[in-house]
Image 1: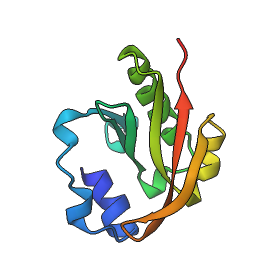
Image 2: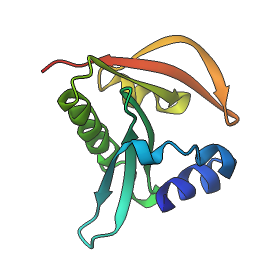
Image 3: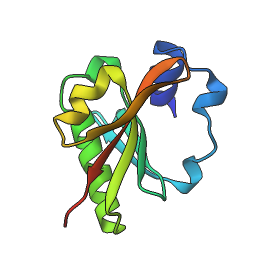
Image 4: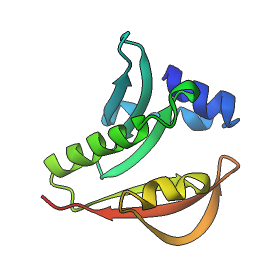
Length: 125
């Protein structure tokens, strides 16, 4: 939760009440750690196959941490027999997700004052 607070609430000015959506207890969480054991990134998989709340500390961005978190969450979705994963991507991250096989769907929309688009990725074994 500390990483998400840093990224979403402090950096992106997402209201705390929107960040705390009370779905965490039902999710599978992925956490990335550095060599000193410090948590540097996180993400979650909801029971319905939605991926969300992917966040990497600012000092650790550009090191492939987000990709590894996404891969871990997609692998977990496969283990749970989901046919696809869906996420709400901030538009500044479209290239990140597109490079990993996600396809944008529909029009952009605002969520917590940030432009988003729905993206889907089919899963294979």
